[in-house]
Amino acid sequence: MAEGNNKTTRRDFLELSAAALTGMAFTAKSAASPPATLQTTTPTSTSGGIDLVNLTIVEASERIRRKQLSPVELTQAVLHRIEALNPKLGAFITVASTEAMEAARTAEREIQQGRYKGPLHGIPVGVKDTHYTKGIRTTAASNILKDFIPDFDCTNVERLKNAGAILVGKMNLPEFSFGGNTPGCHNPWDLSRNSGGSSGGSGSALGGCLILGATGGDTSGSIRNPASTNGCVGLKPTFGVVSRYGVVPISWTLDHLGPMAKTVEDTAILLNALAGYDPRDGFSARVPAQDYRRQLRRNIRGRRVGYIAEGEIAQFHPNTKKAFFDAVKVYEGLGARVQEITFPDRMRATGGAHGLIRIAEAATYHREFLRTKADQYKTADSNVRTTVEAGSLLTAAQYLRCQRARRLFLEDMAKVFAPLDVLLTPTMPAPADVAVDVPETYRNWWNLCGYPAISLTCGFSTNPAGLPIGLQVAAKPFEDSTTLAAAFAYESATDWHTRHPNL
Amino acid sequence: MAVDQTFIKNLAEANGLNLPEERLDAVLRQYQSYLRTMERIDTVPLERESEPAIRYSLESINPGSAAGPSGGRR
Image (tube, rainbow over all chains, first blue to last red; front, side, top):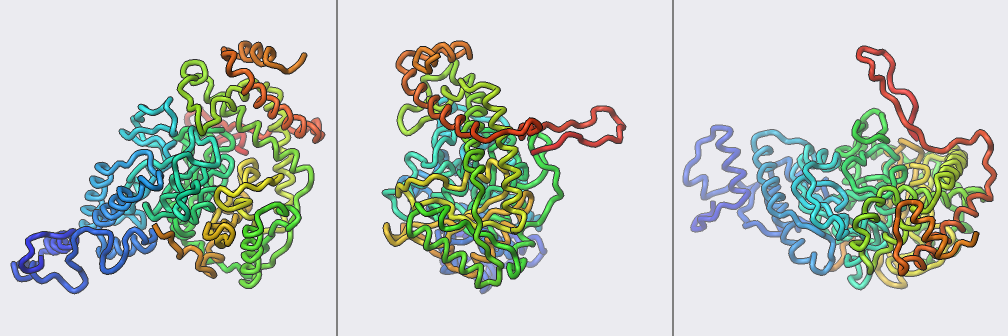
């Protein structure tokens, strides 16, 4: 403790705890003279001149591991920022500050006792409000579930907690995840614009540095869309790599859950915690566990990188196309073997199976709500009720024809990918809230075939100015590590990810 | 049979959904968009042998059995 100041900071607490544990003598003098490596600061957003909320998971975890930063300090800083900025951003539906601080204190104690769990220990994260959280309401942004409080955690929340992460809240989304925009959730780069969706709250909070990591759900691009729109990273893993158990679904055979973060390495750290076989998820993949973070630094030189031909994205926004083709040049400069790719015409028809499979499965999930609580669906900013009512009228024969068409789509995608390691497309056809009319966006396709796909920032628009543009990197099934490594190579060669909005 | 509001109402009832009159127009338009998508998909010939892209997996329930999971996942 500093002389004349009888406040004990978190750092003092950590130091004293460590001293007690090692049996060192504790005197009044040593209490008044903290060691040079620790600073006597009251819990604020800065520590040692570092703005805590701007830290990545990698940066924060290293400080926590070295006991230079307390999980309590970090969580307090995050909660302060949420309190200050969530009214502007609308990123959170529920902020679990009491639970978060309790978990942060537990993490601090564990770390002080030498029970460090790994890079997520003490890291504040948010989860999309489709993820069941024990004792914390899970609403899916719907009036139908507004009072629903699960009595168990979904697998993903379990795994994040087991890794020591601090759950700070439930992230905003459109009703039941239906939609590519999140009503009431704003873009940190331009508050007059939307955050995208459906994992819009997660994207907005990451872009605005309200949290260090998050989860999202992706049925038609809903991790990658907000990642691109808000200037962060989002991975839709291979279907079955991350458990869907305990998450409000849209469509059982198209839903993917995955990590979102500020950087590719942070995303890999989250995936390490989330990935793995779950017997409670009937589509969970039995694949060996991997260390995705350890595989990030594989050399991109000589890798076969396909990129979508200009003719396939002719109607995309000019800023998006420029940023995309500049990204292709970066890969070329890194020594990758780049080649232009077009898709067979048949895929444009069979790709349409995504929409009908999605709505037929969703309608089945919503059947009981339609029969008993139909009037509780939102009437503004939501098309859930109409789409699932109409989806309820599709026949089994129509659904199965779509699933047969899906089989052809899978065959064609395998042929397109045969000569490639990764395939690049823009994530979105235009920056946030800029309307363009395009025949295909190439996001749904990765849900239909289940291949892994990640979005990371590859530039910012000039007209309108200052909006993030996302690069989508896809790979073959269960090559999530290749997706991440290719994304990491690009990110390491650029600095888009170091920019923060001025909030 | 024309795909109109009466059709929608009857089809919904046959599927256990009672759609009020004020919902029929919106649901009809949405349903028609699904039919257009289906028409495009149906332009692609499906070989007789092509199967739906959904599977289920089986685990042995016989204690001590050496058989592992069968079937497969998409």
